[in-house]
Each structure stands twice: as C-alpha cells, then as structure tokens.
Length: 207
Image 1 (cartoon, rainbow, N blue to C red):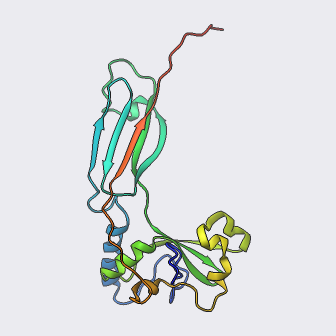
Image 2: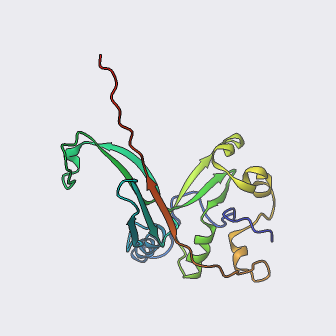
Image 3: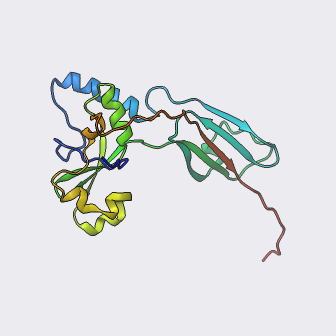
C-alpha cells in the first residue's frame, strides 16, 4: 500500500458530526474521553516552558510537548480589559500576542457520497489502538469538484478519482493490516515557538 498520510477513506459512516451506537450514557462517556485526546485545552494541557531571552530585544521563547502548540493571533486590547497588567506608565493600548492550541479536531470531507479523512489519520489510528471507536470530527460538505481546490490537499487534490471513483481506495483499516503497514519508531518532538516584535519611535511634524 502506498501510504497517503491523512487521506484514508472512512467506511461505514454517515455524514454526521459523530457516529454513535449503544447506550447513550456509555456513548457520552466515550465521546468525553475522546475529546480529552483530541483537544489540548480539555483535560490536562501540555506544560509550556517560557524563557525571556533578552529584556530589550522583546523576544520570548516557549516550548511545549504538544506539536499543536502555535502562535494564534495578535490583538490590540483596551487597558481596562487587562486589569492585572502592571505598567510603569499610563498605557492607552495593549498589544496582545497569544499562543496556545487549535481545536485539533479531525477533519473529514464529504464528497460524492464518500467520507475522506482530510487530516488526523495518525490520531485516528492511535485512538483506535486505544480502543476508542467514536470520536468527534468536523465535516466539510463539498458539493462540486471545483470546490476541492479550496479544501483538499496533497494526493487527494492531485488525483481525486483515486479516492472518489476507485472501487477500492485506500482505507483507514489498511493501517491495521500487518501486510500493508510498517511501524517505524520516531523520536518524540517538542514544539518551540519564538515570539518577537520591534518598536520604532520617532517625532514627525504636527498638523
């Protein structure tokens, strides 16, 4: 099998936000358990190590065991919205640079009556190995082939017929076939994020 990471086609699923079977109370517990695996913000978040490199260079280096750790966005905040901010002057605006985690949901594309896993094939395999059979995912409904240009990537974007027209496309279950897979040990990785910004101050003629 030619491994296509993140492009396994789901089977036995209907286009819904979650596939549930069995006792509702048991399902609620399994879904809550899967959310702890999928969303870093739920449960115990990965610890973040912060180190200020130089006081005057405005750089901050952060390290997390989660590879979902990332820079999120920059915002201009009103001083009264950050009451704990301790300033040496009288700020009129606060520049907020936020880092953290994304939703980390698995993403599925519903195309031509098939569900194609857009990302998260490794997470799906790991969760299945742990015995978790139902997980939450985001489903994007693609109504026309030309919409694939906006949401698809990799081999799926280049060769959509292989996944949508083939009688036997690559399937998620192929990961569990010893004849088709090879488990390769890899080193654990940490995610490092360095945030920096500069300040330029000058006097210009007034109006």
